[in-house]
Length: 157
Image 1 (cartoon, rainbow, N blue to C red):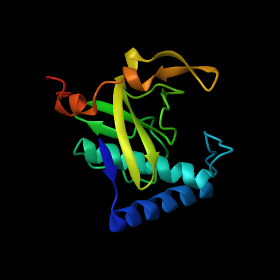
Image 2: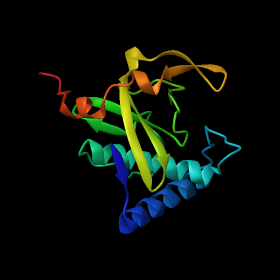
Image 3: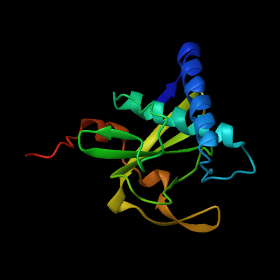
Image 4: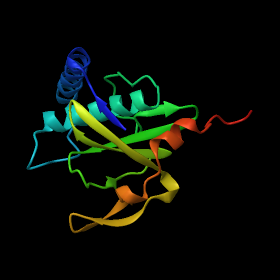
């Protein structure tokens, strides 16, 4: 599912990303991901745009808090969702510290993103990405985001 943010929406996401980045610098939060290809600001923007793309795909409100990362990005019923972004078209879902219930992979570059699919935490496995063993899932093995949207994840009392 491809999500393209229009000019006004893209401007709001960019402004929010700038605020998050500034708050993290103000509080001394270190970047977890270092890239020789992209700046920290670009990685932050693309990651937040991916969260907004998944929120749109699942008809959820994105988290717009400036607070420290909680280990997940969105909530669907009782389900905690982690969003992972890459600009590599054939990139894999990589999860360094599995804390969410499910993970969604988004591929693209802001303002156009493709929500690829998802995987439950318990179904993550050892894969090889960029020549390294990692925890994650290959794109071809992900479940459709439409399937996640149609599931019920609210625990019965």
